[in-house]
Image (cartoon, rainbow, N blue to C red):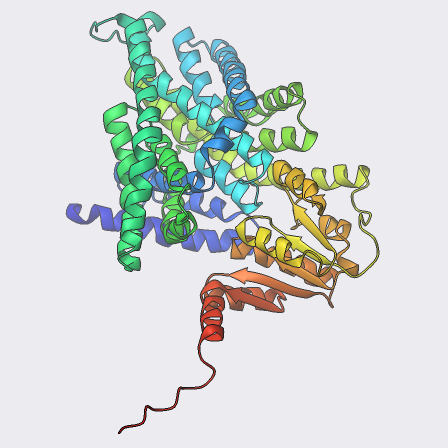
Length: 549
C-alpha cells in the first residue's frame, strides 16, 4: 500500500490525534499533549504501524504556513515597525544567550565547538505554532505584548534563515564536512543571504502590496465564495513556496508577509475566516509529526543531559528574555508574557539539528536531546501560561485593579475597539455613559484622548470586568471578532452579573447558538442586520397594480 502512504498518514495522524486529544481533555490536560502522544504511537520508535516519516513533516509545514499567514492577516507593517526597537535587539541578545548556554552544555558533554554552536542555536528559537496558539487562546495577538512576541519571533526566524545558509559554508572551519569552495567564501554567502531577504521584503512591499489586494477584490466581485477561498489559499501557499524557492527565506516568513500584505484589504477578515478550518487541521499534524521524530529512549539513556537541555529552554531562555524586556523598561506583564512565550522550541530547531547531523557537526545524540527538549518544553508551555495567568491576576490585585474603577451608576461596557467596537462607541456617545475594555496600549490611549473611560486589560478575567463596573452596568457590548473568545467573555460576565443585557457580534448561525448558550441576550449577524436595513428602506406596502386602459 505504498501508493496510499499520504492517505494513511493523514488518517492515522488525525484519527489518533482526536482519540488521544479527547483523552487528554478528559483529564484536564492540554489537547496538544494528546497530539504529541499520537505522533509517538505512529512513530518509528514504537511497535506497530509506522506513518510515513517523510510526508508527516511536509504536512506539518503546511500547517505552519497557514498559521503564519493567519497571523499576518492580523499584523500590519505598522505593527511590525512599532516593535522593532525591542524585538530586534531583544531577539538577537536572547539568541546569543541561549547559544552560549548550549555551547557550555556541549562542552560538558565533550562535544566540539561546532556541535555546541548548532546545539545552542537550535535551543534558541521558539516554535511558531506553540507560541501563536498560546497567544491566540488568550486573545493577545493584537495586544502590545502579542505584537512584541510575534515581532521577536519574526526576527528569530530571519536569524535562523541566515544560520541555515551560513552553516554549510562554515562547516569545515567548525569541524564538520567542508563544502565545495564557492564564490566569495563565507562573506559572499552572508551577503547573498542578506540580499535575498532584502529583495523578498522589497518585492512584497512594492509588488505584492498592489497585486495581492487587487486579485482578492477581482475574485470577490465574481460572487463565488468557493473561488474566493481558493484564491486565499493559493496566495498563502504560493507566496510561501515562491519565497523559499526564489529568495531562500522560510515558508513561514513568506506566508507571514503574504498575510500582512493581505491585511491591508477590507477582505482580510473574510480571508481569515475561510482559512481557519485548514489552519487548525494542519496544526494538529504539526504536533503529530514532532511526536513521530521523538526517540523516547534518550530520556532513559541520558536523563541528566535531557534535564539540562530542558533547563536551558525553559529557565535559561525565559530569564534572559525577562531581563531583556525589563531592560527596555516594559511592564512586568509584558516581560512575563514574552518569557513564557519563548520557553519552548520547535520547527526550526528540528531543521537545524538535521542539518548539523548531515554536516557531521552535531552528533546524533545532540539531535535526540533537541527533540526531547522540544517535546518536554511544548508539554510544559501550557502549564507555564496557566501559572502566568495566576501571577498576572495577583499583580493586578496588588496594584488594586480589582476595585471598581467607575462610578456606581448605570452605564454600558464595551469589549473590543476594532471596526465594530469603534462604530458602537461612537453611536453610544450622548446616549449612555460607556466604559471600554481594551487590552492594547495604543488603542487605550486613543480612546482616552477621544473622551472615553477606559479599562486596560483582558475581559476574559473577571477582575477586569469587575473593574469596569459590570455589576452596575445595564448593557455589555462584546465586539471581539472571535466567537470562542466572545463566548468566554460572555460566560464570565453572565456569572458576574445575571441581570446585565449582553449584545454580541457573530458570523454564523452556529456562533449565535454558542453565544446564546453562554448567556448572550442578543447575538447579531452582519448579514441579517444588512437585510433588516434594506427592508427598512423598501416600500411598506406593495404598490397598487397599474390600471389598464
